[in-house]
Structure formats: structure tokens, C-alpha cells
Length: 178
Image (cartoon, rainbow, N blue to C red; front, side):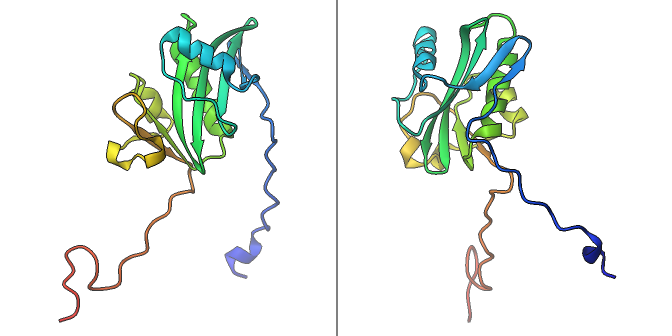
């Protein structure tokens, strides 16, 4: 009997809840933005950070401690891609931990295949989550012109598409038939 015949058939994939459950870590609750991101935009303004204009498709997460907003992140969406703005954290205790939890929650629930982010001195956070440096030329036109320099990109595992190999004699350096 072939080995593949002995494996049980995979069960149906678990359906994702349309509203993610809030999570709690060290007394801070992490949840999708409750008011369409307006409170998080206020946090961006307080911190002097640029935030994208509101859109119906935007995605955002907030961190709340004791009923007070202490952090947030927003994503500007274009199809299956998004530009991440933030995280902005105003809590003096564990700011990196709060930022890490916000990004982790966002990546777990964002149904995007590609996310772009500016470094903002958070290189170790981006690398920890699988973001890699990308030249500015690789940024889609829809996201060009945003403030900041440097760029990181994250792709959802399994969403990579490789180009098929070029037929023999075509492509770089190929001479073709003689």
C-alpha cells in the first residue's frame, strides 16, 4: 500500500471569525479598532506621526490598558496589499512589547498577502516577524509618496509566486537559436 494511501484525508479548514477575538498580554488588551481608527489617529497626532486619511477598507488595531488607549497601528489597503503605519505607543512601560503584540495581532488577522512598513527604528521587530528590506523602487505606485525613508516588506507564507522558467535560449544572457 503506498504511503499516501495510508494518510487520512485532511479535514475542512477552520473558518476565520469575521471579528477577531481581543487578546490580553500583561494587562493590555489588543483588539481591532472600535471606532474606525479615529482614536488611533488621535494617538498618531499626539505622537506627531503621519496617519493616512480614513478609508472604508482600512485596518487597524489598538492597545488599551485600564480603559486608556496606549497604542495603535493602521493599515492603508489596496487590494491584497497594505502599507502599515505605526505602531505608535505612548505607554512608557514596555513600549517595544506593546508594539510587538500589536504587529503580531495584525499579522494574524489581516487577510493581506503583502504588507509594507517604514523602519521607524524598529528593524529588529520587522525582522522578527519576517519582514525583509526592499528597495524603494519595489513599492507599488499606490503607496509611493508616503513620509519616511527605508522600506520593509512582509509576504504571507504560502503566497509567494515564482515566475515559470524562461524557455531555453530566452531571458537574461540567452542568445537564442543560432
